[in-house]
View: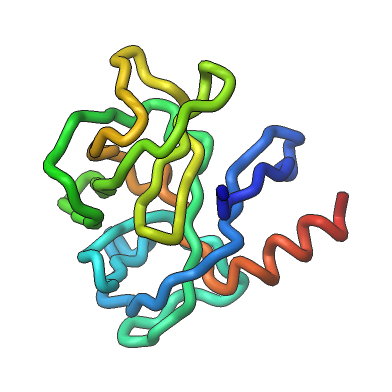
Length: 157
């Protein structure tokens, strides 16, 4: 069961919106713009999509999605295990390919409960394979209280 749903954004393009959350703490702001978060799986840095600016030291219920700039992400095989990692340029999410939809999308699980639909890369990965996805900061969407965002977007449609 996927726990992300595809909804149109303001320009009419389809984007992935989380409907399941995880607890995480904002530990820093990178380039005074992108929040660095710490959760049970490690660290990640991404584009904040909340109405209120993130506060360092504050714990949030967060969802995750992929922005339009994630289309240029890279994927490589990795050892089994869910993890988040970040460096000065990107965030790496390690997870498992659960299934392949329509020959164009991978259903990529970043935790045992949270999945993201990824565009299929040029390199083929099999169902059940563990991969690491590398994203620029704007490619990873960090969504505080995503249930409210999903409901607001549904009402706008």
